Length: 483
Image 1: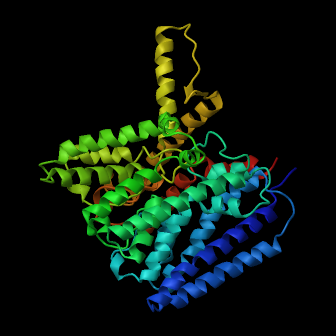
Image 2 (image 1 turned 120 degrees about the horizontal axis):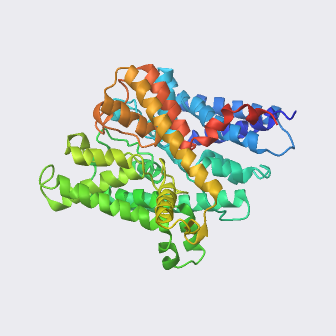
Image 3 (image 1 turned 135 degrees about the vertical axis):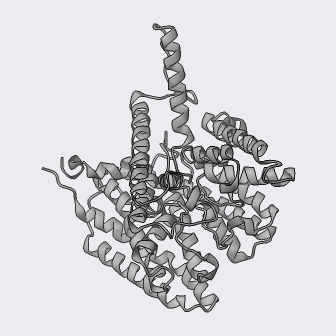
């Protein structure tokens, strides 16, 4: 009987805690710069996290490589543990003294969901808001991806860990080794983050705001430092954020290919990329036609509002520039549907992903042709690459589990007293890592009023959605813990 090797799990989790504690140094610097009392809370939180991580890393040192079963446990437990220790600044500063609220906010950050229980964001210390934004940036490309990039001794299951954590079904390795792949994606992430920050700064944000909104834009997270979210800022800033939300929803592997000298024509031939842009353009046009003259009176304002909300939701960012709860029913329904779409595979976006829809649409077309011509034989391909039955079955099971979890979560939230619209959108938002929903959890509201049970359920759905269901659910199989 081959049991799980817990030393590898605790050793890796210790290293991840050290990364988490080290990251708290950034908000600590902001607290010192702004002369906030929160500096002590961040110093304590950082020291506790680093000390706990160093102790685990030292006590459970082992020369053995991490196997797939330990890898799945590490990926799931890393988010749970990082959110646990990441909650300390909220609790110690008194921002969110209730642990369930603090854990909800932190998990929402690391999973880049953007759902918040803060009722007055502008009353929160700036250093705490910087930590809130930083959790999203770290979670965007993934703290486990960062772990794989920094730590070389992850063994042959490194790519499995990396695939389990990075959003979307990666179809191929960009580099031969997982460590190199993680580095490539993090490099693209850093370059785009720098460009976004500089443009937001040039457009009128101060350095602090530009950095925070870069963190939450590139991670498609959606936390803001203002109660009015991006509606607080100028139209120019809103257009800059629309562009970078769109870029963050693209497969980061395509950016790597462009840096390696591939032509734009090659990238344009990527079917998922084209479908992603087509969905954005078509839904923006439809919403524009539905709200122009009814909600907004100038064409530019209508176009900007439609484009911003569509891009924000399809990329699962969750920023808002308008209260779309007050929009016509058709537009609200369309935005709700977009919560189930998501960006491209290999992006920082959540939800189902365009790639899976592309596979299902193509498979449905082949089945229709087969019904007309029973002897018709044709292989399912995407970008001229064959899609084997294993991938197709995986996509079908993913859809089944996604809808099952949505329905189960919706029913549980209804038991807590939420109305149907608010409950459905809250579950769709949490599972798809979107952030705001409709009704009582709309863009100008928050999740503070929900019962503790509802917050716990939504927190779990954030984690399951961010890790794309399989990574978490496989741990409930007895076979995962023995041969």
